[in-house]
Length: 546
Image (cartoon, rainbow, N blue to C red; front, top):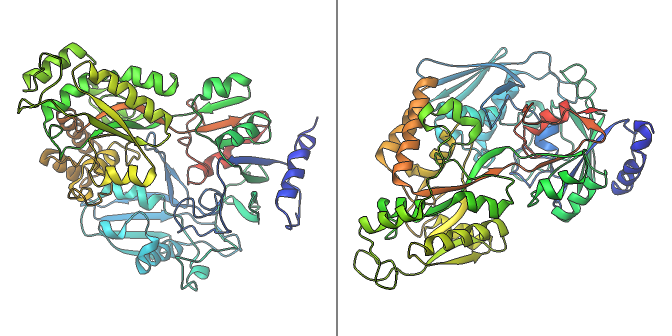
């Protein structure tokens, strides 16, 4: 059977799904992405937040200056070809790629980059990563160079500048309502051009004048919407889709075991944590938190929550892919020290004795109350984690209950510090550990109890940690940044405002029956990221028909 015949049935389905759109051409090779969710209207505005624009927008149509791999920090040139920081780290100079054309044939230039960022300043609602609020004071273009100036050193901001989709000045300068503009006919520089949309399918076609000669290798990419994980998984298993970002509980037993073409790559890019609300006693006592951490068997938590597919989180909270670059040798591979007997003794030594019935007492001699562990309603992995934690803590005389809440109450409870303990992921990650510690423990990302904090869920701050965060962003010297990260890690491990529980992974599932060269642990050219972010562009560029 030829590749064309193999694709006959899927293309027929697509033709029907696209409804009234007449197909001007039938691509020889179509790479099919299955979505575990529906989408809304025809919005291809790259300034719209994720899940408000169509999936093709920021992964196939528009391009960024660079791609920063979230696992290892490796920078891939895209519309930018080089970047340098000034000695005082207050000026970032970017060289732009010559010979690139927009989909309508007009030449791309550095002026388009300067326009994009200045447009975000003119319309602050477009500045989703807050670059203008974090020290950026000016952007100007000259020839093939763009210069970004800052009022203070903040080198981690490069990650956000690198990932900003660039738009053509000659079209967007006429758009006076960019927040609500749906951009029905997008013009980008990306490897694919927009073709057709319906509620069931979106298609892009290969850009014949793309600046990388010979790529992409596929003629089209199609996204299909489904009602959820099970429906998306079924399409992959029926060979009706080639890729899906699908969070199933057991990718090994529920997918990969079905045949050699059913493969997955779930690289760890974050961790799940047990957060302590440090505004409440006894969680405001570091000695209490350390003892509780020692009473939790995180290996058992991971095994029961994820069937052994992901492991216990490293005690440092630095994901494995970043440890060798960012941690001193003595800190790499550190695991949590589970020892219930030692935890029991540590609680007593810290002033929390047990009564004759084995109930743990507070420093006032009164029995500790039953503490709630906040989780999302119906989130079986988090519920399982809370059950294991509760069983572990019962052994040291602490009783807990599971507090399941719908999303708004769950997130609201964490962000307003109205919880006791809560299970959640790291609210911030990036190409180095800085992004996690900055998001989790910066004073500016905290708030008074009852007020909403963006991401400092534990309400923990520490002057040494705050100084280390400031030191990191004030320099572009890798050695100085590594030293700052070591301070962040050691400070948090000493005070334990959270307990790292399990690894948290990407959810990429591949069907390799028709295509090859997917990202993998052996070839991690992207970080297994979802289909609607800049990293996915690399997958669409690199997958090849068999």
